[in-house]
Length: 239
Image 1: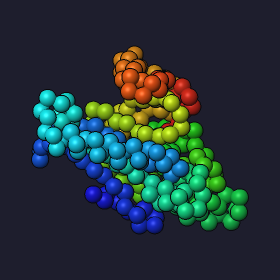
Image 2: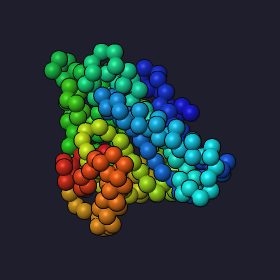
Image 3: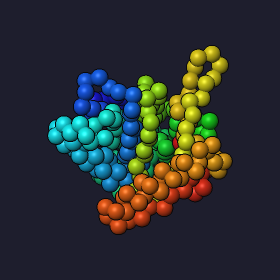
Image 4: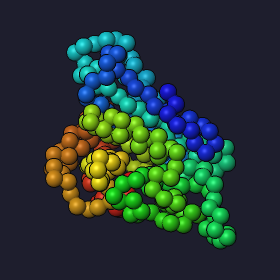
């Protein structure tokens, strides 16, 4: 179902799959397509939806996958994706109009949505220049796509057990941890994915072991071995 519109009024989609009408407390979050040029990521999300529906149709109660509610956002950047298909293959950002600053060298379309979330690390590993591929935007959570994704996270924040974000950069599996940041009063920020610091999580060893287990499982299917490391080890980035 559509959860928000973008600058060109394309809907950001959100799919939930579960064998029961009542959503349970074991939620898995999958987001893809935040970077326009990474075409294989949303395709993988659609294949995942298809595969999960096949499991649910079979109604196999012994299959552990039927005991999870899946929250899947397969296309977080529809405007940028369409632009990469029709105009510029390696386009990365969304299609926000350029800021009117009177500076031709800093008046370009688009914001890197992966650097726009309203988290503690906002701005880390990003640029304040609109012509950069890593432009973080005029302010945190300025983009409708980011607001849509953050809204889903916050609505289900008490039940999300696993969160995966698919990209097509390389054969890597990054481990991050996240906190719900409580501000003054009862206001809360979006879940803060700690990829902006090299400081390891309290349960870093457990996360790395889980990542290695997943890497071995994937290797058994296609022979590809994913390298497992903390996200901040490659380069810190507020995301």
